[in-house]
Length: 317
Image 1: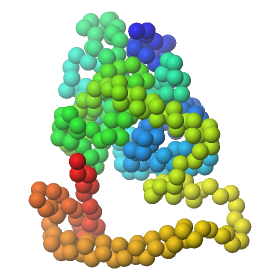
Image 2: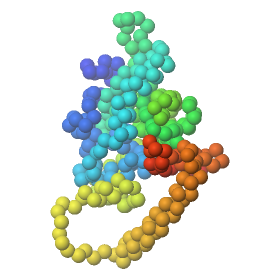
Image 3: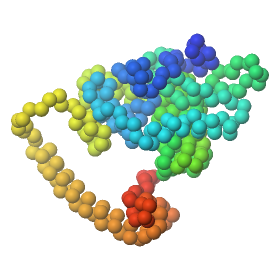
Image 4: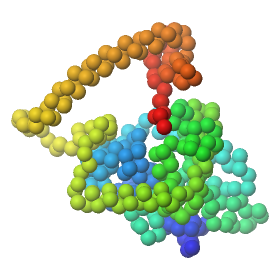
């Protein structure tokens, strides 16, 4: 198997070509991610498994059409701020290995396949002047306010499916065969997981990516789905405003009107259900049922309720 090292990144990986160490949000970083490429953070959207971006929105992005501008949320901001601290924790837990910033890579043959892992893991040199051998694994650092999407510490299936897609894509791009996860949940719950490379899964993702890019080239727009970011993408498409009537199909008119009625009924039922649960909680913190956490209460300084929030429930197998 061939190796690839560069002046910027002297330690090789089995496959992959280093594009550079690019700062997120810069012009160079955006350029490496746009056009007819698929990055590791986009592959879950390609296969309709991303909780953040729909296939519809990604199609518009790759087609060079408008999408809603990126907004820095608190979880994203603190994830960035805490990445080095969590990576350092992993480093302390694993003496004998060096976790170094990875940079942005492309596959040696499939130039459209891109990945920006958090860290590359090398065997720690035994001597002061020894150079580490070839990178052996990847380290992916995550933070989460709640652990509902994550399994118990070290569980084989503990990584959310969208992150599994991400690291399978990263390993396939760089030619590595194992990814370690260092995860900080709720600011204090540190967990680790391992994902092994799966060639069959990688092939499924590659095939899906090829089909998706062909759809972009052919102008075959995905159907409109119920994701919020799909709606936000549609909102930013018109360029201008014409004060005219536009005839729409009866089936779409009926769907919209029926959904409005259903939404009002659902909102009223949700308000009533929240009231019942909040009444049960009283001065407590969480509502549980048969060892399942249902909702949690955030209180104001005077003890009254600021909000009632649901815990995410995993789909039944």
